[in-house]
Length: 413
View (cartoon, rainbow, N blue to C red):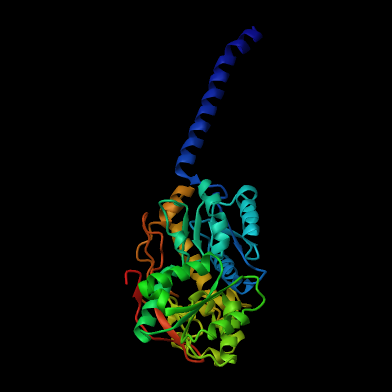
């Protein structure tokens, strides 16, 4: 009798267990539908990665990565983004493309990050672009202005943040034509994709006159200990305009050598090499007087922003979260602003934190005005426009700070 009762009860128990399992499975399915996560994302965390040259020949630019780490620390102390803390794994690649590949593979395959954010450098990002796109891993807000980052047709998972180097070079070409229509131009450029992108923009801006106006070109390798011989050779061409396409270390050497040998051309220095703290101060501020470059952000070395509320808020943030950094180094402004842009994207994602939606929201920024960008400079993106920042203005160094010499110039000039 006892056995019979047990025998009768077993089907009911089995049914109940099956129903329970089905209910749990259904609940899990609903939960997954409501919360779509990429690898590295949970209900409490968003894990992302980058590589930055904390060592090597361009380590001065590493302030960019340190500023991003500091900004996310502030965001996390305030509760994160939609309740999730941002965990940025920032690794050293020494500005070496093979090392970038190695570190990026580790971030994606071992650390299981959701996406790459803010990796610094043109050759380094070039080395990982195909790898990330083949695996549908977002490569977001690259710290490089190469035009190749704005190619959603071929590389839909890659988006830059800086203004295009080609656009910047076209702005310089127009300025040269206006100021010195019969200019004799000498060009120094870094011998990689970064330098060649600027060179291409200069050729586009000068048009058919390029071959006549450019009387000398010299390149340097990122590992070269000095560029003195190139500067002497360029002076020997008789050029009265010098376009310097160099990162801060080489830019500082160029400024110093140009001054020391008595060459006084119209000196145009690309924006990424024009940091006061990393380039002009090492070269000598007195030797930097008259240099022209382009800006799209509030330069921390410029006293005109002293009473600007946004600038004062940035200084307060620097004091609290990035106290060991050089406050006149604009890389701290760039890291702060790029990190702020990413936070906007993640907020727009809500609970759909799939890689697809993260890219979708990155390509859906409308009129985003960041406090440390120049007034009038706004960020706009779309599925066919992967160029967040498209406006700059020309400035000239007066020995203390950069003075504006133009209004904002757009990408449609």
